[in-house]
Length: 173
Image 1 (cartoon, rainbow, N blue to C red):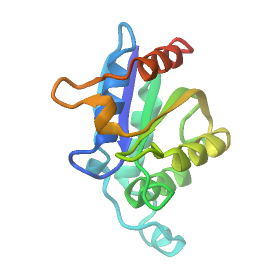
Image 2: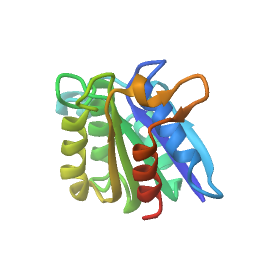
Image 3: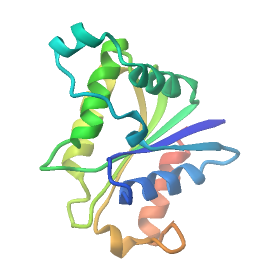
């Protein structure tokens, strides 16, 4: 099973990247590819720029990566209650290639933050819009207080209740 995991964040040390990778590694017999959206940096989307540039090759490559996966694991960072600009831009370009961005793949949506909100606002928005973009959302999980619940040194989620919720989400695949 090919699992594509990524953080919807451009931070090089993204806590969401750690969470996405950890979650993907919990899927049995998975070949995990940890993608970095920084490798897909493209100009800000606008209709004018689309007319000028067409569909950027990096957006096409991102769309192809999603299509090649059997399962997609995304962990959303939250900026001011919404998507990060880097993810939203890549998503906008990709949605112009095909509105079915997620290509009916099973998706596990995660989110985390250092604070008690666990990036719940962006996770709720992502889940609500997912059906419009052909995501088969199997489960969502918000991890609050990341540094209290995740051991960065060992790369593991330490809160048993959250681990159980994650494993339950994975069992939906």
